[in-house]
Image (tube, rainbow, N blue to C red; front, side, top):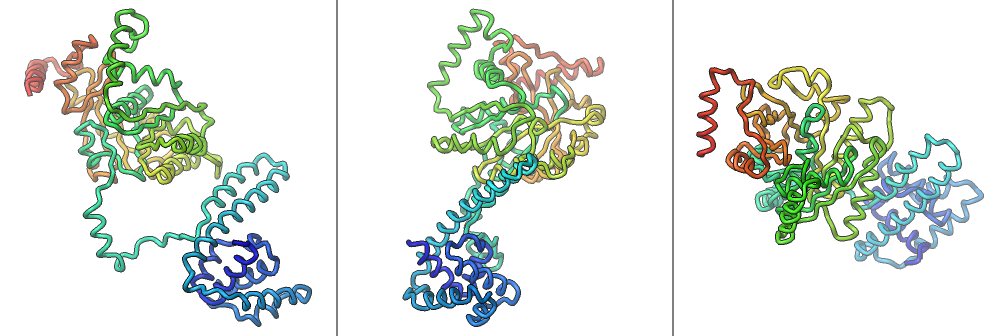
Length: 466
């Protein structure tokens, strides 16, 4: 449709329908109109409806204009009145055309505004360009007014009771129980531990299980290289000693044999992408993820290793608390355009590494309480000496849980220090059996008092039998 004609239709509809006028007033800007007279009329009508809640009378608009442009305003009104177009019957068509026009003009104006920012020569202003462009890309007449609770009561309950939320299981039975089946879309979850506390290893183990169950997994790493992370997956999938899989000929041959078997399994995608430590932001992640989706690879879950090695898209106050909180908020927001859960890890601060495991809480998160404030789910790793049976146990405590509601629960993983595989508390038999392949030890903990060793050993045998 001709832009000059469309501008007349947009304002003609605004003169007849207050709701339409309010709709375009909240999205359009004066500079979006090519016709100067159209821009002036729109600006006046927008101000009038915002102040008085009514459509401005024609005479009020014309007589408020400068004498130099008053004739052009009168001619514009004459043109509008001469247009023969039934807006009520063609509303959907007008809405679509207007929405397309809005998006086109918003992006063009954003580009022009960005050039102006660049010309200032101030490096601190360049970060504003992202905000300008993002704001333009979100312009849309289709405004979501939220949920009309009473007006949609019947439809909403039908939808809720008949629609299953697509949760992405971890395929660790006990852990999934706490998550009510897995990580749902539009959520942000965080696993916290001290330095070298199995954070990255947890992401690798869960990602491995999810990929083998057909899910598309994307792992974004700012700490390890792509090859280093891939080596962990080699060890996990092959169930071999990670320190020997490439160095011993017999082990390398076994690795090749085991990984070849993966081709026979209908698995999902597993992408590992490294980013510069301390330099990457969510904006960099978005660009990469869009590249995947353009190739018809849509992530089912996104892992980020890890929060404290990122930078915010733009810094608001420049202090560590605000920056880390902003990063957490941006990661949660990342789950919305890609309609999938985002999971990351963070560290305990010094005090958190020293307190007893049963006393640890999210107040001991390094650098910012903004992370637990933003997260939907958070668990903390450690060792509960009172519950420790085997040396290779990793205990976790759920400190926040919007996904399942069970807070304060403590459970455990078993881990193989050679293959780096992790096992649920329900998988003790498999953990014990896999030691035959990896050569890892399954020793009882030295922290267990000597007088309890016999009963512990008996408990271990009983658990193995079960």
